[in-house]
Image 1 (tube, rainbow, N blue to C red):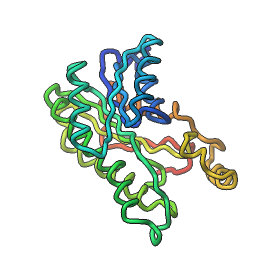
Image 2 (image 1 turned 90 degrees about the horizontal axis):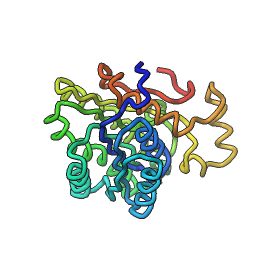
Image 3 (image 1 turned 180 degrees about the horizontal axis):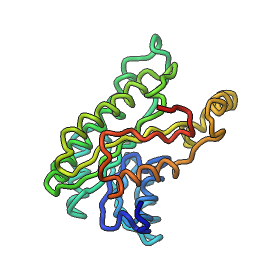
Image 4 (image 1 turned 180 degrees about the vertical axis):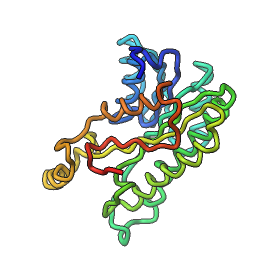
Length: 252
């Protein structure tokens, strides 16, 4: 790997779900690596605060208020980034939500809402950025999947279907655009310390920890560093791949 301390210098990255958790960690790691970062989520006030914080640390960031489930909003957000910085080199599809329940009790609106954001959002974002990436003959697209898409988990049929769909979408798009110097990959985090996992009961957390050979939860930064690698020129010959970041929770 390159020993360049700023491996993303001059790149422009769009990160969805960037107001917290893994998305924010990716944005911070990208900024530290020299990229300009477009922070996208539905929380406009939080994004403005974060953009100011990035600027205070010497980085360049812009707030992009965007609902990834809305194709028109995604197009407007992408157009705003292009207007500001003339290009988008890196897309991180991280925005997502959960509405857990056993399938027999799952409401149709909960099924559709999760698929719309987690999978449909990635579709809208990829479709919006691809024309620019194809024209410049360069791009890095990384989608955040999940270990549960690989092993299953009761009560999360909608979430797992959406994340498994991301893995298939990754492979399909990778095959379509590889000749244009665009790579398309996924990262599948395991049990990561985020606001989502912090809501779990202590009993469930201990049960999950018992299934992790590393014996601990992961951090958002550890996931973000894997994403940064796939976004860098060091990963130029990797495409259609899912990189597991799970402490050995699932080995494939």
